[in-house]
Image (spheres, rainbow, N blue to C red):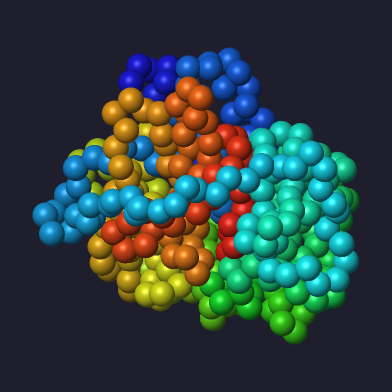
Length: 385
């Protein structure tokens, strides 16, 4: 990799770690678009941004300790993958019950309206007037597909797709905005942020069943990464250790607890020499009660996902992804829901360009749906940023 490409990769990796600030995320998206226009040859190396934090997945590299390596992933035999694209015309999302959404997406990075997919129907999501591309980057779905979140001016709306309930989150003052940050895996809690560009975010924990809202006190200089079913916030210090990161300290804190408890993840024994933990890619594991954590090169190009116990012990390397020696495919970690770990595969081969949502099931990768090449996707349980 030459120095110019290495610098761009590193910039993208640094940008990904700042996606906890949506305004900064939008600026990153605009800058990334300019970078791609200026350097078309690099386009195959850049992933679509969505989910909490998206992590670019590069062909796998040798892992560390034998016995801790991921089981080889095979692609499950299946019928042709369903394809989906924005229809020429789509109805607006109507008030009232329409059913749970399988995901929300926009067909391009800029200027495309957000669409909610409910069964075999697609609905245009409200609130696209201000900036369709940016609005799509802030879409959010609860893990069970019941609750859809989207921008409404400078505020934010979360509505029940199975009923009539709607929750509005206006900003606290002029010049600020609000947006959904993280869902708990059981879809009962949501962390909402009130922010302006910078690091002065404030947070509110929402019980979506009762509608109650509780101000969330974050540990000093903490960046939130995830939300547990118990309503605890998982965060890390903004000024934590320089890269490469082989030991990561998280803070898990209850609402109102400005200190919390520390969880130290030491992955030195399982990482290859040129690999690093990617702190911005922490997900709560809904099955094991611990965490899923992306790993990658020092350039921020991800090479796999680790499963980590609640006490910080590294349990296993969940997946290394198929290698494409011609660099025609790149992978992203989307999130987790009822299908387990969800990935995105961006295919850049001539005449075969698409973004495919892929589920990891045991040893197999199962294609769920193929979308337009540069789609922005919000799968249940994750926000598109």
